Image (cartoon, rainbow, N blue to C red):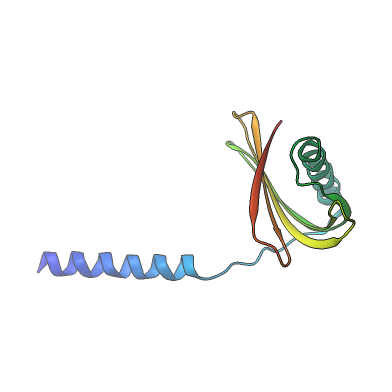
Length: 124
């Protein structure tokens, strides 16, 4: 009987985990001035460092919103912005900038409309 109860609980946990992972989440981007100013500095720094390397070569046109997560293990910014590529074509992109506290690299993930999600890194 113990085995059946344990097995049932494990199945329930697996099903709940699957459903919570499988559902898409939406980010509630904020537009308060202080957060947008901080996020703009962080995004422009990353865009400049990536542009100086092998790309991508984006320029910030307009910040649409941002979220910030600060913690013991680093800083995470989520940004929604209008970016222009090297051809001047504008796209709305969700950009995630992860700066782990102890590591020298910053990870930048881009998810632009009509394109596949990709990740690049640069030095702090």
